Length: 187
Image (tube, rainbow, N blue to C red; front, side, top):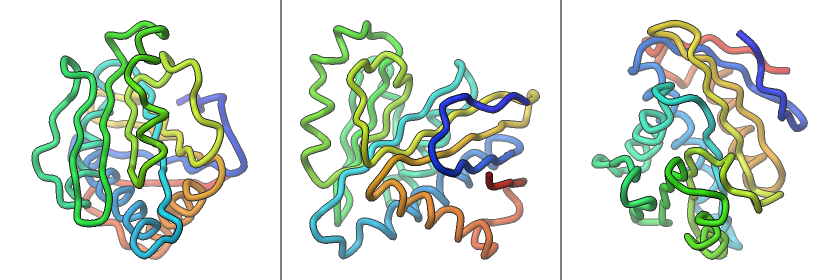
């Protein structure tokens, strides 16, 4: 499998198998996000940019994140463009930019969401011309086979770096269900 060319600092490379593996990785990422948000002052905003071809599991990953954060009915915002969910501690905003031109993305007001205590999950971020430079977690998904997925995860600054470290520690400490079929390397 090829590795995504846009790396910052360190990157985490993971392989998951079957939809359950992608969902399990999403749960681990949700737990890593929760660890940063609970008790954080000032309140952070983290943007998770999720790239990959159609059918690679972007929304499955988001469903796993939502499940870890107590949101059990995550829906794809393909037609509504943005879905908002609220936890006890912060908001989750899920945007799907697939159907938009770069000019149309500006009209969504994604920057305004970042001004609040939220996790902003963005599918198809390639269409977002003015992506944030800080507090960003990048997730690139590539289909390795019919049932396998390769993930390249990296962070850029602030709270996103803390989320990244929480995720790495959870994996190293074996806090992710081994049944998800997870293998990883850290560069």
